[in-house]
Length: 492
Image 1 (cartoon, one colour):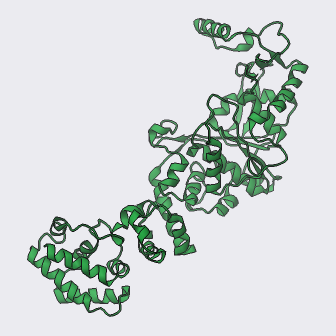
Image 2 (cartoon, rainbow, N blue to C red):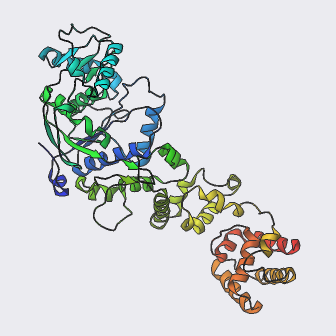
């Protein structure tokens, strides 16, 4: 049996063929995406391939547009696939709904060999069998009610695997050595009444046809593995490397993460200003680490350092606070390493509406002094409004400020007027020169920095946060800054 025992084996093994096989049944959530990231990293690390396959055989749950959303999400994260929709490949079609002839060819092999049979039993009769087992308090196994003389298969009739119960042993690259008894093997449905294959059957066929070497999926499929092994044996197929990915847990840590726990679609996170690099970084490390203290990884570093044996066997707790922290780190990383323009290109759609009246050059100046305080790009809407529109004067905010409330309104007005007079004399309206003048003003007024600078900051922004005062004044410009200071002085 083939299995991975450590990172060294990944480095030495042949090119891996992995797959991401989502169902187009709605939005793509973070658990789905992590199941795409790990196969991608293994494929890239070994110089192999990742296949994108759309498992759309559950027609009742099919959602129009879901496939395009899957493709868009993968592209946004930089998870390019080597075979699949859009890019094509030699093992298509890549939509299961277009592969029905392939499944019927494979199931015919099982019918001919006696390892599968057409099942004429009605759903009502099956429910009766199930109730009978419940009354007897014994597990319901369909193989115990298998028809003695199955008819020849006809359209509209399900096809079942004829199980040969036995003990199964296998190695899971994350969960370790596994063993189950014969009670886990049953006559599972291969082809449904509508002619479509079940997941249990279709993915075995597809993986074999597409040469998949590593099957990486959620741990919830672990209990079904004996039935998958039965199909590998029935077809005489070599088992792939089986990798069970533990659940992403709710913040409480006591259950699988769901919508009720605040989980959003990946698209929602993108719309909320999360960077693709941060989302990729966070999800890759959600249940995996390379044994070091490193937390920020580029995609290239993840490809280099990822190893299946470092995936933890227990569930990983989702922590949106950590995601926001990591996103802030990536915002600064992009600005510091790639420059202001590189980060600015990511901010389209995140500025206050009034920012559209200003030049790109001005918006980049604003970005350059606030970027290090951003947790998400969407923070720009709340943090930068005063750079584009005069704030409403709020005298109560000024006189009630914790650094100013000991001063009378007359003292505050006088301090504002002195500040205006001093700043009016500034010849070079630059951050360095403005800082010199502000320091001189401290000496002349005998005020503490918290008092003087808080007053000027409030007067020009009326915001709970603003960058360094000299930088804020420089970007606002002489005319705007002085006009706002005068307006507050007059209001008081």
